[in-house]
Image 1 (cartoon, one colour):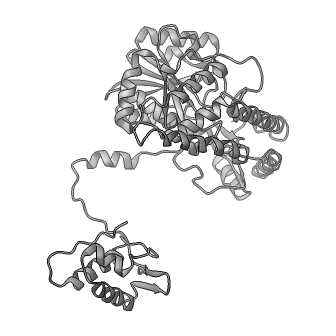
Image 2: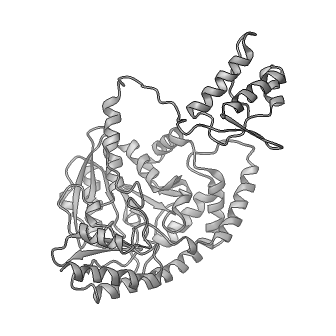
Image 3: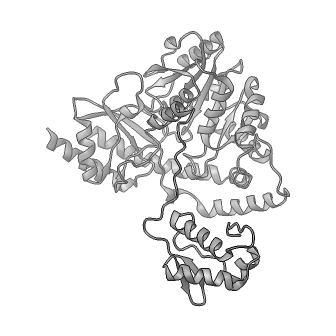
Length: 477
């Protein structure tokens, strides 16, 4: 890579080179420890004599801005105060808009805002050791080989055909989704799928109905697109459909495993929700974020499988069943919005990285995903049993679990008044990470309770951690 130096004219060549290198080092543009080009190479690039470049390097070395290492080369030795330059942009015409984004609170943006504890009950996290890294590595190599055959071309916005077909089969088999590869759009995680649908369906002032409590990043995303977001309460059967106002264009729900409380939406409530969406002309986003993991009872079909009028967009992700770092998700879209969503995807990022898509297609088609889900389900089921046992026993005086038959988190509601903020702080001192349910309320006073993920904590650590919590609660009384 060439070093960006501009030499003008034929005068003061040494001075021009010295000033530019010195300014670049002092301003932080050239980082401490970065290697400079050899004098011969830089001289050829700039059309200078090698002696001119050598003299400049010597001067910088004398000023301790460059460190020469025999046999290795010349390296930047930036002063401690070197920082990238910040230019005052003056008064921005968009200052109010920028301020709105600056002020926006994103509660899930930092996974461990106070540092990671030894025993973490944070939701959405998994145990990395469960992931079949060797199987995935073979699939990635396959993906790279597939990519090498495309000749460096951009690909279709909806995703590679092999992955879309594999996702359609997986969603139909695991969740009863009625679709073909034609309706599948591959996205960079479920969050991008929500963004695509919001861009297609919303304009400033449109009404979006979300569950309360619910997934905060969904409501914040739709609000950032100018929507008027309305919180709809939930009960033991799910979303209270009668609260959805007239004029709502988009309804966001988690029917298989309500986020964050955990109960499934009843069949009667699902039928009512579909009828309400058809009545007001709204599209329903069914976020099926972690229901591959089921532990009891008969599995319920997806809301999308009950849809007879094309009003449900089914959104899934591989972040919970595989790794969140992969950023792979998908949406199964009704015909009414499919082409528009593909246009938005094309304009937004053109397409998701194809090597990862080919790798995931093989991972699904060769049965690795199914085996991984079965293995994780067995482990999560054991952790869930430990959680239930602890809250039915040592912690039963203070908390009651909300019944949940899927996923890998539970909600524990307080049975008596508790200072949850104090409990959380004291637990952190005992190396236990606890998180309040209040993070998921945006429109109504929150219920007092805890949101407890057990995907990222080892089974043998659950009793140890929760007994520490019990001891803290006893001291607080």
